Image (cartoon, rainbow, N blue to C red; front, side, top):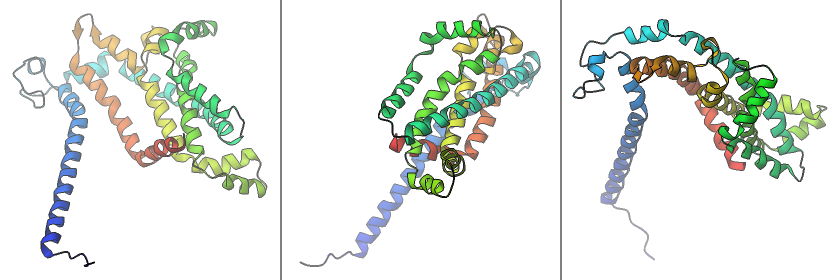
Length: 293
């Protein structure tokens, strides 16, 4: 059989196809980035638009057809309780994250490592709890909030939110734990560590990407939740961003669009910065946790 002969013309054709493929890939990536960033850019521009510029249909929404103004940003920062809402959201989110980690890590480790015959079914049952719509749990959870005397208090959210963050966090950590060889902690136990010591000193550092995924997920879910925050809290001083901003900037049929968009930008920027700082570990946590889950 004659040997395969690659001519210079073939090499040039292959090189041209390779370049065209790379150009198409980068063009698709740029278009995807623009599509993803489009709403954020529109919100940032809208924040500084005058009413006459925003509500004139002939104007381009992505440029300033008239001089920009800070009035709507000032309305958000000084005319509403935005600072209070942001602080409430922050400390509620931090506490919910800590509670989620404290409950989900031991539960996930037990289900993934202790080899009980019911562990798989229990993990699936825990995940199904996350799929239950909040409207079905509303009555029972409201009874719990009243029994604890936490109605119209931000502490009610600290009690309620783990019911929606813990189940999926357990499921995620189970999948991630299955990617870590058992030999590592067994060797640590041979060296004298207890099972708890092996988990804390050996397994937990390897779990860091999964823990980052749980932290990001739990905090963003807490910050964006609306139904429970609206149902359990009425005083403005106790509200979080997800309910406080809409209730103060949507008055009847009047929507303060520029101030609403300003709130969205101010909330999105710090979350995006933190998310990108841990992006690699966050993706590793979800992908590796999904492989064995």
